Image (tube, rainbow, N blue to C red; front, side, top):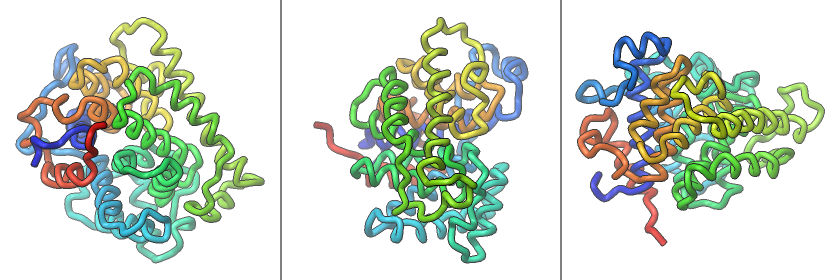
Length: 336
């Protein structure tokens, strides 16, 4: 099955590869990473299987919820996401330093309360968009893509920037699968941020906005788009300057929050569009949330280049390879 996979496979496996490479470098400084791996950074998977973190585990949870959905509506998908998130939270494999926001939100979800009450309304951590890649692989209209991306984020991260960054991440994957070049993404995402600035998707989010203290739904969601647009502005400025090989977190942020994870991962992907493993290495060689940055960079570069972008021997060594392949096979699209 694996040898038949294309861009969906490239994106999902790329996410897992980046996650695995960044797992070993998260919480290390760049100097400490260089001492361990040399100035080139990590370029080879470690272990057989190479273990991933909660980033890949939760992306799989989103992926299987979408796989099991009979229709892509809030009413259908929300219970499936809840079920998958709670299964992840209770799993003995959930021992990879999971994010506290996700754990706290899952604890509230387990009580059966509406998700708008269970979510951590003030959190825009990167857990909102580290797991959204499967949404970008679906062959759905952009309104449905946006609703699904924001819904899966909102179950745990209720901050408007978490919602907007998740939509942008999924939209970026969609564009790349459709053949858009990596270098074109920043401008297209900024344009999307302008277009969607006051669009509150009540059919997907319900009354979530009321937990924010904002006066209107439009003001609530605009705050998220504005913060994402500011991060993308820093990205375009960084890409316009010569690359000195330094930690991209200096320009686009350390990636612990959603808009910075998106911007810094895009920096790695765009700078290393012709060297997919280099994109992962650049993400892993950061002083910030290295696994999430490298995972998203891998999802982007893999969506652009397909599974053939990655070393052939890696597919048999990554944890959850069977699940990644099964989901990717479901969403592969024929070219043309």
